[in-house]
Amino acid sequence: MATPDLDPDLLRAFVAVAEYRSFTRAATMLNRTQSAVSMQIKRLEERLGVALFIRTKAHVDLSAPGEALLGYARRILLLNQEAVDRLREHKVEGLVRIGVMDDYGSLVLPPLLSNFASNYPGIHVEMETGLTAHMPQRLGEAFDLVIAMHPVGEGGGEFLRREQAVWASSAVELIERIDPLPVALYPPGCLFRKWAMEALDSHNRGWRLAFVSHSMAAVESIAAQGLAVTIFKASTFPKKLRALTERDGMPRLPAADICLHRAPNISRPASLLADHIVLGMAQPVLSLAS
View 1 (cartoon, rainbow, N blue to C red):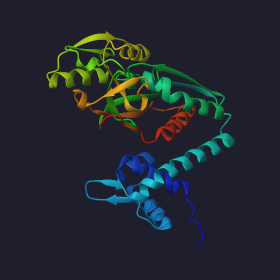
View 2 (view 1 turned 90 degrees about the vertical axis):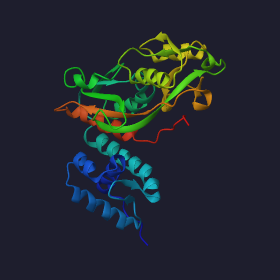
View 3 (view 1 turned 135 degrees about the vertical axis):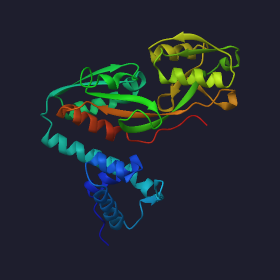
View 4 (view 1 turned 45 degrees about the vertical axis):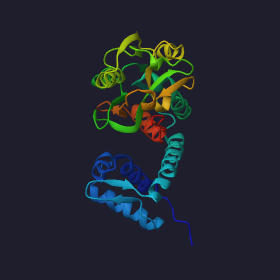
């Protein structure tokens, strides 16, 4: 029996439905009709001989074969894009301005930007890190792209991944036993700052704001020295810190959606980088919280 071909167009429709958990939203993103996307999924399922989704009136979930295919589909699409871009569009030139959270700008984006730069040496990227709550409002004026953090299901933009907020403390000092609890946070406007205060107050846990900084590295150092607890995303959780959970007496924190926002009338260089980020970041994220 001949091995079925994995048509990139069918895989692109599959990945879109898998990420949005909706045929309607996937069709909008792909600029196609819902019936066209449904037909593409049906063709892919027939070609592979498996059901890729479990459909109900309220939800669209991946089946076990669908979950197995998703990682391969993303890799195939990324390689396909890289091959086409290198051969046809490697001479594209321009400037792309991107705004992003400090931890993603330090740890997540650099490998993606390095790979992108090798494919597009004529595209120059300027990156600004900081609080992203108001960055999407500056799209077109100050930024071409913004990667921002929002409460789950809010904020709009293009969903990239979901992150669990995790309490972090010194690996050796039991700082979480101190009352009132010293906390190191980011300035007003930070979603994690808001969640920390609300969670501690709702659990009647005494606390004091011991340290405030825009710098992730500074907050990490304060926590590592046993001077305060803080919050990090699960995927960027520092190795030298210790994760705290409800077993340590800490209230559970919400999860956040990481979304990509594109400027209206986006340029070709910015669109290429945006597509590269979407494919490069669409990977499962490990959660450290229980």
